[in-house]
Amino acid sequence: MRAPSSLLAAGAALLALAPAPAGADGVEARAALHLRYTDKRNVPDPDVLFDPSARVFAVGNYLGPGPVQSYPSLLVSAGLAGSFFDGRFRFVLAVDTGEMRSQRFPESRTACLASGSPSGLDLAGSGTCLGALRFPLPVTTRGPSTWTSNGYPIETELRQTLLIREAFAEVRLGRAGFAALRAGRKRITVGDGFVYDDYGLGVEADVDLGAVGPQWDFGATVFLPTRNFPTEAEVRSPMVAVRADFLPSLFEHAGVFAAYLHDVTGSVPELFRSASVESDVTALQGTAEGSAEYVRSSRRLAATLDVPLQGTSNLYWVGTSGRLVLGEVHNLGWTAALQGGRINLLLPQGPGSAPVEVGFSSLGELLSLRYHLAVVRELRLGAFFLFLSGDLPPAEKARLGLGNQYGGFLGVAPFITATNLFFNGGISESFATRQATAPGVNARGVIAPGLTASWDATAWLGIDGRAAYLFAEEAGPYGGRVYGPELDLNLTFTPLRWMVIGVEADVLFPGDFFPSSRLPITKVVVGVDLLTP
Image (cartoon, rainbow, N blue to C red; front, side):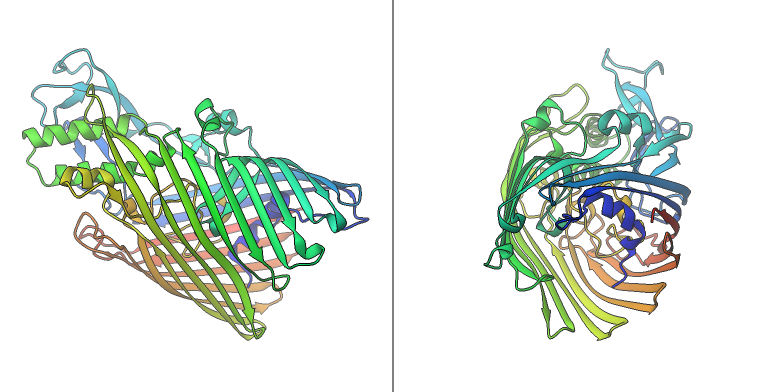
């Protein structure tokens, strides 16, 4: 299948060049320029901003249609890959700018606890402040345009990464180089990307017994799950992953995997930030302005928006994954896993108030099934089913007295491309920043049956279509479980060996999970990639 990500083939080659065969030593350089124009309309708006004129949070359009987003962007990637001593030693260095574009962020204003305000909050200097406590709040006015990389100001991305994505060395040992040891920063995938698919700094070992006899491949890695230069807390938050795969043929595998994460950085509690915000937003929407409950919810929301969520977590994953080719025309893939562990979350109670620690266990489930049928060589039809368990947000369960277990499947940095709008698929899927998120919208989970079709119309034109119906496992804040049907279409045109043109058109018809204003959510992307030979 001519996958949409082929538009970033040069970048992928920089990040994962295969070991060179004997006699093919040398250094290879690659570079690529990726240009995009994106138009998004009616995307659900999760932003919660403080309105200085009304002195309340503007929550009326929460998860409703957001403003139009139309913007050009670009990504430049480059790198070197070297192989020496008949492929026994190799290195990879890859850099990229991230998706660069112009953005305007909400301004941050200094706020205070206030008397006479319906929310109990106001901007500093208003004359209504109570006490000396001051804290920042995002407000409804936006600052000037600034150039960003991966959604961060460019200077922040430079400081955190120096734009280095991969920098590692590999040593191969034994007959046919069946044992490999890699050290440095590289892209790491755990659980087919449902658990982790991002860059990380660490050590990885791989033993491919198929090169010397038995058709088995074993791997183990210990790494720091961050693409940034690690902080002290991140150094104390390693992730360990192991796997074992049986390899019936070159393109098939069936195996098991396991992983463990000890986190003291607060990255796991951050998975629940949007869910914690939702709890306070729905409380505000159902409460009269100026009431004691409205003031408490507003101040608690201000604290949630102001400070990083903190806590210590210990999570584990066990599962199986595979891909089998049956009769040369049937292609079956699967990923199934259980995720468990313990999470301690410090929930803000309001500016100036000590957070309350909530400890809860986690037990989530994942099931992904993928099937493709080669009708003819140029046409493939398929189907998929994706289930990511979800639950009420932990903060909401704690307030409702519904126990101390969260049933959603959590991934550290998941990268899921099942659809283009709801997930991260499409011709720009490799632009994704791999942000950590709880499953579905605000941790409610996902159930997604779907169909796929791929047609290589000519040697230079590929067409890829997908359709899915998306549900939440747990009802949302407005009582519904239907995210809606989504239709995706991707075209890739390769007029020259060093040029790829892509067009993407997607639409999702929001269901009853979202507020009553359910305009179709659309995305259109036009891309041009210029690749080195």
